[in-house]
Length: 309
Image (cartoon, rainbow, N blue to C red; front, side, top):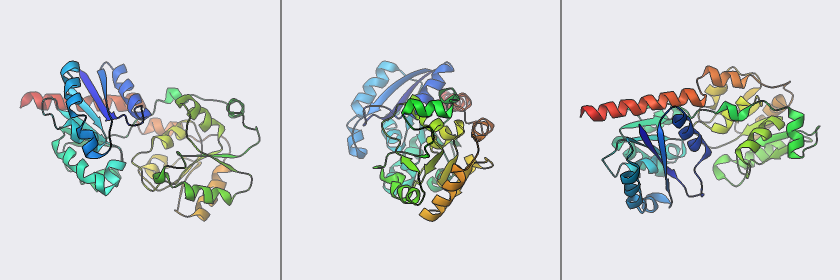
């Protein structure tokens, strides 16, 4: 089986969770190719259609796996190869994009959503599955906290809260995080921007807590990664975070105000040791290998349906 992954390449690279998902299905024996979309909005994406058709002719995939609604819509403008589209959150939560995602949903042979909230908002009724992205827990193997801090050049006795993204990403709502941390004494808020995948793991092992204050999310990968590192998590109730962190000591859901965020951060900062978040990830079947097996079953079902027509 050959699968062509289609996704945005506007930043000069594919989103890490898309690459990691592709690698996990490739490790399970699927032939994988990539096609990167460059341009903004539906008009920008449409300019890539001739190049996509050329890539399909050369790679000859059995299935196209598009990531995000606009990619799914573009991929479906050709009707030779069945398309599986995964919706990651912004393509459902943003109303101006949702209308295009709904067209992609109707055209796609199958649809994958990463959170139940997105299923509900999209109004999905058939030919869909709920499959959050998996975590490659091997990339987040245990690191000693002091050793991790030394690698980052941090003081051993500092108190650090790792923010779930870049401060200039409006969706991440960094102003709430900054205000909340300002209410705590001797605590630094670390922007997660410009780090490699290996460095992200080190950050999570070196930090005292992980903080998410986003306005919207689907199934935020960084929360699952922080859990895989046993880092205490404080998050607003966004995406599937409340479900994923349920029952994990050291993980706290906060209201959307600085006072409550600060209160929950105090609890996280005083948490002793690592959380059992890694066990929760395994329990939920959110490792990359288990998720890959589910996705491959989707590919097979699509091919079977296509053969029967």
